[in-house]
Image (cartoon, rainbow, N blue to C red; front, side, top):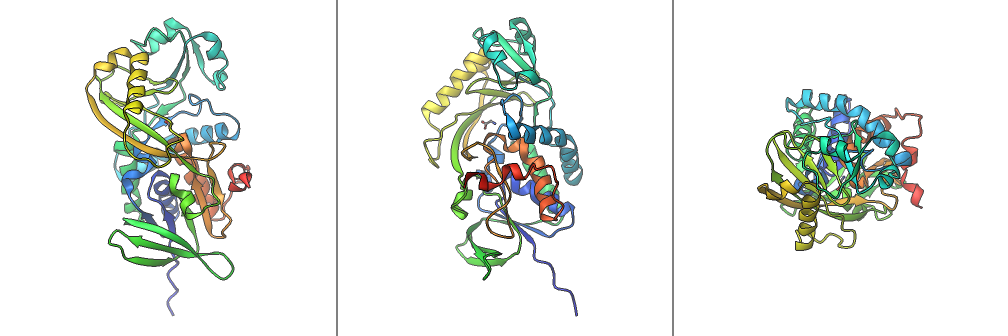
Length: 366
Ligand code: GLY
């Protein structure tokens, strides 16, 4: 008698977390199926790709998680590039956080991880920085990756090459449970309106800002971000500039990705707004006045998945067999590498004993 084919692990959500976890599971030999409603709404396509645990001023366990991910990123990216044959645009370019005075700089939560800059140092690191900024912190260890144009595509190709199956246009309507309450599968609706049920004993919930719609006990709300890009001259700016309310992320070809509004009160309201776009334009004029005249390229928006403490929900859920990797808020691109490693280890029963997953268990809010 032939052995039954093992049921694939279902990844509920085709964004960056879903792809990163699918990739690690497939590399470890598991059958994986990714269910994705609309790829274009994934936060992985919206973000600027900053790798910035220090520049974002994280602290506590979230800083540790971010630092662990940052350490892992070069090897993780090398794996994705080797599996896909595509470059991901990783740049260890350093990030400068500007301040109006030295006292503000010295009070920054991660000040001890950075190099303090005075006005002369700021001008050296960011030629053309606006006159408001008199001090800064340079975090050489932080950087960026070209998530929108490269990383997402490379990950998808790496997954396909490793046999991951994709069901694009599949909205998961409901989790199916067995008589003991354990996960038994997912009911979904395809883009053509057909409803289907897939059997599974393991799944990972990676639905970003929409995660609470499948599992209402998850305290995840959307925080909208509007962004734009400009085409600058190549090498006009080498480092990322992370100002209050606006940041500038220069890609290798001179494209300047500018982010982002942080709108917690608008729910899932779609679209650009004049106020949002104006606040970005004002931020550009203040940080790098010359960039105000660079040609605009694109404008877009998306929804960060935010929890009450702005840290992710990782590991076991209340449903046996269902795992969580959601709520990464402002740090999804940074945290994808460590999230994928931790979740793949946990699904395979190879949990690390350093308490890292425990610190991000969903029950901290219950
Ligand atoms: N990490 C930057 C942002 O969420 O806007």
